[in-house]
Length: 48
Image 1 (cartoon, rainbow, N blue to C red):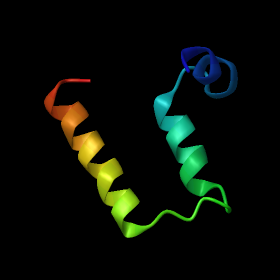
Image 2 (cartoon, helix red, strand yellow):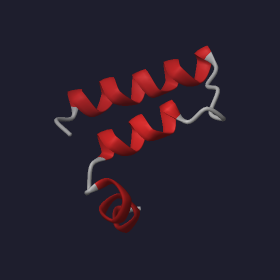
Image 3 (cartoon, rainbow, N blue to C red):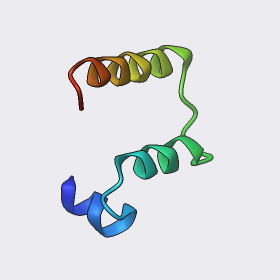
Image 4 (tube, helix red, strand yellow):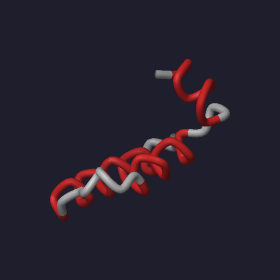
């Protein structure tokens, strides 16, 4: 995954997530968005 991030997104997780979220075929449900929000909150608490 790190190589993919480095190759296509200059190593940026933020850019990769933004690209996935803006892709027209990726319709995320409210439940999926809630799960992503929980993962982000958890990462913040852990200092990542």
